[in-house]
Image (tube, rainbow, N blue to C red; front, top):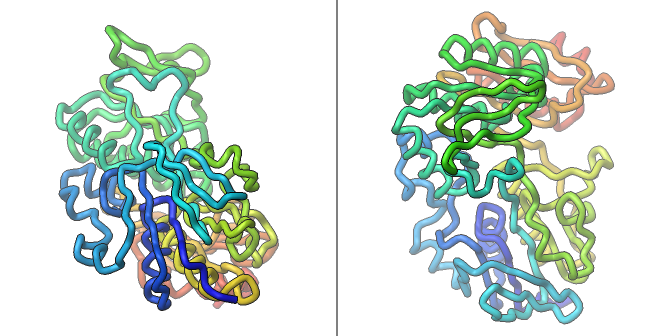
Length: 399
């Protein structure tokens, strides 16, 4: 089968960049359009809640590629151009300015946006953290040393709380689970992380639900917790997860639910593929439908989609990966391979909670499903193969 002559990639972040680079690297010489709703060249997002928020990095350092490297890809680059509709039958993408762009193959890599607390969009002092502008605005706020309430104890919330505390802010972290990052780390490691934050001076409210914000003259003055309690605040960061950007696909006929629903090869039908945070695909290892919001997953899926487009439908192969994500908080580097959520067993196989240097295997149904390392990067990496092999946890922890 001949290769498509026109390929359009919607989404100019890590996944979209990975697709266009993979296509060119694979010898694709046809028309290649990259569309992004932000005005920036592709940039890295994990540092937003770490190095950029703290001021350690400038925005320029986030760039994933130099302008010269982007030019070398010979793209029809449409930045600051949001896609608003897809006609999958006619194979056309419509942009907000009315332009209609035809394609033979389309890759949807429009990612996610930050979930917000209802009714807070226009309240001054309420922040989310998804774009570089979000991070820079919050950084300006933190420079004034506000009383900051962080709503949400996941990666973004815990990392931002650590940065804000290091910058001298009074910080309260509110989470609806028992421990910060408890979903990913489990009870024991989550409790260790909670202790670390508490020792640094972060006030932590666990098993707490935020019902809304209190305002004064249009600016946030605090948050209401379920049960009637109020926490005073000069600023609030909402870090309660993300929402897939699928609305522009509503009338396309594509299977859309919690993301773009793909088969194991990341193909969604009608010449449309998906990659990155928005892709909901059938994991061939588990048979489960997954959608992963990790930077490394976005890059790996982008390359996989490029390979499969070039291979054609008969040559496309299933996407398989061991997910990887990391978090930097104070002097802790936390690394996670595989899947830890839903684990029914956790075994520390190196180091200890007391030393805050450890490797822990996470198991499900007797098999290693994930590994978490704290300040033991090389050792943690060594256990990755056990995740890939779904090795018996009993034998692995005894090795």
